[in-house]
Image (tube, rainbow, N blue to C red; front, side):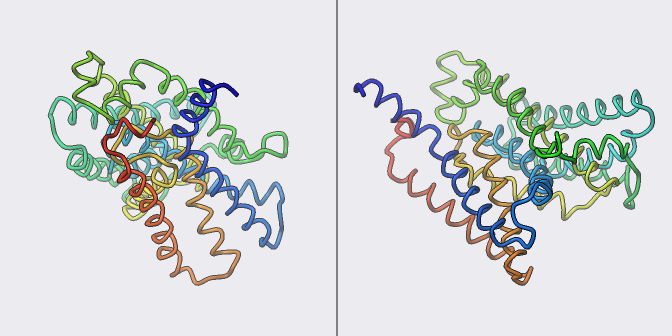
Length: 331
């Protein structure tokens, strides 16, 4: 192997190291889970696990897009809740009505993310402050739609999206993979995607280079809202109902941050990928499954999840402390 080839592989490994570690962690934890599950490794066990993890995976992808720009979205969980309540009103009836309802739900998520981006970019407010405020707005709208749990959804469609494709592969994983291919891959390889990374790693230098930072950030927040809406839509597919659950919205927001950290996405921006965030979400969800199969007290679950998260943050902090400037992440 030539020196140039070795350097290319080294660069590729350093760039995707977080994703590879997250994938390895998930595989190890899932193997332990199915090895100790009473039913063993079956299609139904995989389907149940993937359906539970898909919701967090969508929100983790949303959080990843924003974190790459050195921002944070504390409204992601509330956008999910808002779109869940909206879907319980609109995704019903004939195929045409159902399709229209899905379009409105996704448009609502896109609009919510765009609102976050516009306020942060043109209002020049801190992302953490802005998204705390907008999360309250989104939750208030969800309460207006569903002051009490209720509603319904097109059950035929819901069953299709939560079943197994060809009787083997969970449809939720197929949709998740398609989302990565149709949203993340084009964005990450576009001018705006490269500008988003640049905004997170060296914003001043990127600005001086004439990169479209404002449009890149706006695209990141808008797509984050769209992905959170997909999570809300899937929540409705699973539950057949809508509920303005404050605790649930906050939990998904916090867990999405945990997932991106486990997935190797740097909270300082400029490093990581949505694929790593997805594997981080799968690994984080598997923690709860492990506690279930080992019959541990549910009260231990937050503690165990917190310990895993702190270890992941610690590993990332050690790596960050070893570099003198952020460009060395890729050297």
